[in-house]
Length: 187
Image (cartoon, rainbow, N blue to C red; front, side, top):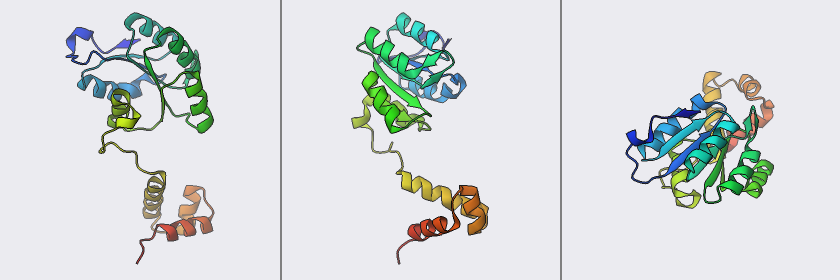
């Protein structure tokens, strides 16, 4: 379990304590730094057993968890946290995001489910303010816009070769042509 320093070293006006549980702990550094900058106490753990021990030790306000761990699942952790720490907000932040898993997570007691990758400012806003109170400058781009930008980038890299771009995108050439036509600006 990694503790980002002693809690007394950080200015903590809000007294919000966050436990981040993720098997890829090194990838949580920027989120932890973002939360610390906002006045939170942060503890990070790479296994469920470490995360449970951290939760029992500090009684966190917020828990952020991935779905898959070497020693269990995020759903098990959500059920455990919901039963032992009823006032703790539990948010799943996972690469393994689809509708059935999100529904199962909410039924298990999760307060929110945020798919990865997510901008750290956006995620910190969700954690501290709730999904309904996200500042307007922290919005997730619409999936269609993200897809369009990706296709445009692949087209640039392939020098507008539709057949080659289609292979890179794992699409049929005609499907890509239809998408390109749809993304063209209206005259």
